Image 1: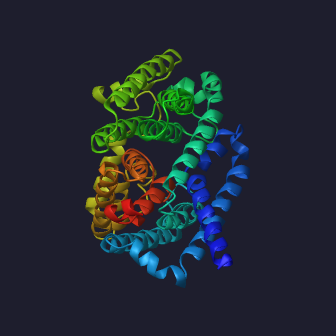
Image 2 (image 1 turned 60 degrees about the vertical axis):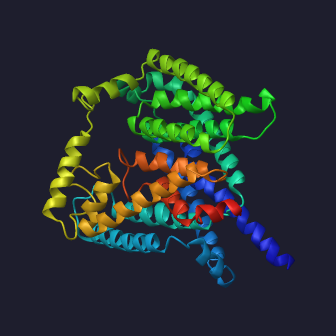
Image 3 (image 1 turned 45 degrees about the vertical axis):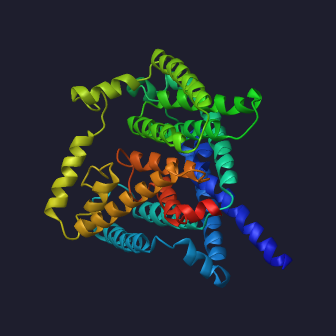
Length: 417
């Protein structure tokens, strides 16, 4: 009995630790890399730790004693589970075919295998087995990881003033941390900090709230300096969802109003500071209105990628064209990429999965007393972000959060646990 209890506790601790390490650990690693040439010496051990821990969690979670539990865990998601399995098999076959016979891929074959199976799929499956009664542990450990990663990224603001990327594009980045990743990392910190401030059942002692107010400010500043549109659009939508959900949760109106005022003031200060420092945040959004998207950089414009992908989908509707657009790479939109890689059937399956998980996540956010509403917010953030950037074989955070949403019990059962 003691051995079984010890086994359960050990398995639970691994799950909780793996959650934050897999989702947000890379930000800590990447922020500490000062030389891009040595980045793999640091990131490969990190990826290996995540992979080994993921395999252990899967082995301990899928056993005879947990079969009945896991069936209950997936109750209500059998159709979506079938769809995701069919899509994963279809996409995996396409990936294996392309790395064997397609000479136009922009990466080495081994990288596609590593990214898809080792970084996205295997760690993602472990998110089906979250400890449903430990939502607060997951929440606060995630906040700690995000806060540490963002604090480590602060020197980039000083160093970024003389960096080539910031000088050419007005977007903050590190040697191993691009502006989009930095934007999403900062946005997640902002979102979780705001969630804790609005939902925390604590005393009126302001000292307890100081760390979360500070991390909220930090997230805002780095978000504006990253000047990436996808993360900013995603965070705006998520903050609106969070504020909208408050009316169902009985949160004190005065408290909510006060925090919103503070956020607006801090956002204005951070915005002005970023602009004065050379951030291209404003120009990147106004370029959408003028039609000069990426006009000041050497990047391929999103409309061109979308058009090329759409033409290839129309030309190869049954089995799809392939993983990437020839000589251009992935189309920076996961739904388009799903149709491009797997044809109309596979793309339709992915679209159904995407819509289903988004609706389920919004339901979790809006349901009163749901301890996992913050997870729903994170999923919506990355689901929206995936429409602007990222690839199916390398969007590990998106896949992990998608599996987490699929694995949660029905909302009414979850609240009772």
